[in-house]
Structures are given as structure tokens and as C-alpha cells.
Image (tube, rainbow, N blue to C red; front, side):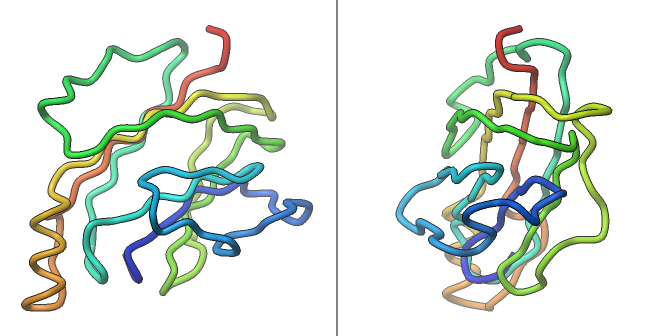
Length: 142
């Protein structure tokens, strides 16, 4: 994680009108552009733990008491694959497979450890696994 931000973006990103990190909104936990999800972190530079789940239908609700932030959004993919992007490292090599082809999904992003990540950024500078994310995708309309 670098510069308090990371993103999830359609893997086949050549035709996206606003590719990562253009027009990133640092004031919002989860913001969107076509084919793109932007996530603002509590810490500037650190290694966050990110778990991604792909469901056939809506996943069970997450207890808000277990998370510092939660948000939901729509996500459209033309390829069925999502790339992870970091402000400091660019595109990660691995992709997240949502389906064999494109479609529209709902996504819920939950985060814990934001204050701890911010404190580490202000003090030591980095941390590993202090901030945790759960990203859940499921087909829209299911």
C-alpha cells in the first residue's frame, strides 16, 4: 500500500475512461469509476492484508462492530478478471477471477485496523497486516 490508496480495476483496462489512479478521491473510503474501485487506506505506506471472496449470491452481512469502515458499490467487468493496483507499485501480477466472462457485480469492502495503520505511518513508517480488508463480490441481481 502506498500513498493511502489502492484500487481494483478491470483487467482488460485499455478502454476504461478513467484508468487507475486518475481522479482518485482520497476523501472517500470506497469510490468508483467505470470498471474501477478505489479504496482509501488509513495508513500511508504499509502492507495491508486483503482477502477477496467471490460468491454466487449475496454473502452474509458483516457485523459493522467488527469493522472500522464498510461500503458497497456496483462493479462492471468486461473480462471477468480484476487487477489489483497500488499507487507505489502499479499493477500486481496476479488477477482476481470473478467469472469466465464479463458481467456486473456487487461488491462490499470492509476494513479494520485503520487507526493502527495511521499511527504506524505517523511513527515507524510501515507495518504489515495491521490494516485488514475483506472484499466480497457477487453477481448483481442475485
